[in-house]
Length: 108
Length: 112
Image (tube, rainbow over all chains, first blue to last red; front, side):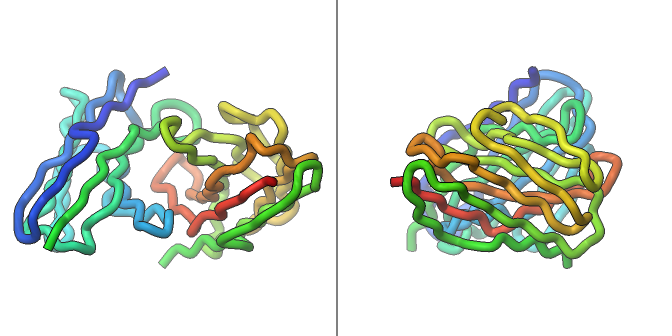
């Protein structure tokens, strides 16, 4: 099956700092999503981005499908950005394959 | 906005009980999914359904069954709950064609 690797596994930032999260995948994919899992466990959709670049407020994402990676940028981080960020890809069939996530803690 | 709801946020059951987890989506999506999430193991697919009454096994179907009698509702059934089924259960839906998936709030199930 496809391998989805996220880095770094853990990240601690001070409020206001910027960060880049990376997702590498081992084969061509049909779609790619970024999620934020909040402290209550819900997965919040951030981006649906099989290729190209998208921006939503302080967050943006870029997927370079030919090189099999995606990046999530968080600018001017806030404490509410804390949580786990997952990259997930649709490789074959219907279901997503998830990376192990990046755990982000933003301190005041 | 897409809305996926799950019947309970927290559930405590005893070993051997039959457990029903319900999921409802309001966007007329064809595909629905059940995942479980465990520390160190990430999210794993249990079952999915691509149409009413249709189902496919995922990576870890043992000990589970599903039911989809109506398009908007997908149920996960633990026939005889065991302690190793203590987990976070997440339901998701997506339109046909393998597009963006949307998740419900999750159910934290504890089996004692």
